[in-house]
Image (cartoon, rainbow, N blue to C red; front, side, top):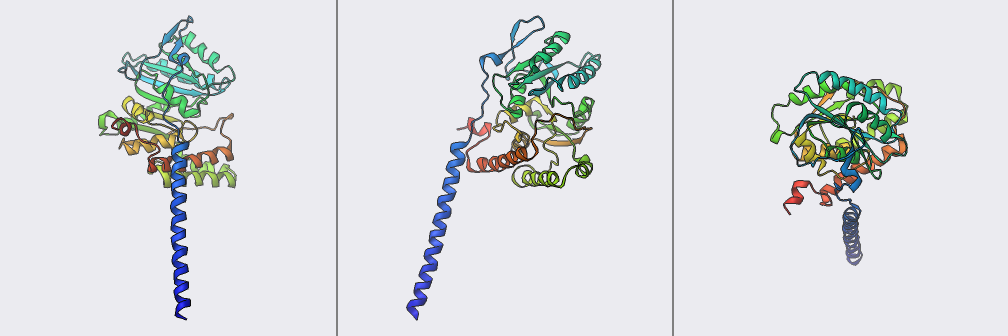
Length: 329
């Protein structure tokens, strides 16, 4: 009888030991996979991406990210196959910016980043360079498609503004709402090293959007919001609105550490900002759904959900590190 009890206890002990060993092996494999599959921060410019064309077709160099700002505002417009939607957004933006420049202290540039488009996005954007000049509108054509995050990063690192606005090419947000995100930025009283971010937000439109969406898409939306909150960013209701205003210092600090170049890049960007204690404010903006979105509801949300888990795990395991951490190694 005692022998039987002892053997049972021994078997339970062995089972526990084997389970712990297996769990450790699985954990080790996960860490190895996260490190091996982790991409590095790619800030390199292809030789063709170091230059832009002037209105008369001459080639000039983009500035270095280390150069001091020489303008008040840079507007970075990531564009992939946007020959049809881009003109509407650009017409609205240029009308606003030109009116505002009647104040001599306000200077600006718009950088349209063609993210390896297969249509005539570059040709359409170049029409604005010819109309307004290369000091106001520059076109950065990427040699290959990087994704929206990669396009915004490349445009940001080629900009000259004291403030940098990320604005989607579809024009879903009223461009005049830049004044709202500017007010949001100004409302931040303490800006460490002059770093701050003001995010346009559609959170106030959530009830209306839920009423218009299918049950399945609503489930995906709330599931994504939960994953963002659980793994990465807290305190920001809408991380994905493509209308964000950065101080130059905040933009360079966050984009220098950015790894995710596709749909979930906004989440990593804000995660990095919170890691660096960069103050972030959320501001309600006007937003209208525009046809022609590149976002495929199910697969894009699935990819973003995967990226959210990977963002957290890769930073947690040291597969990814922030820019300042790498410099001290």
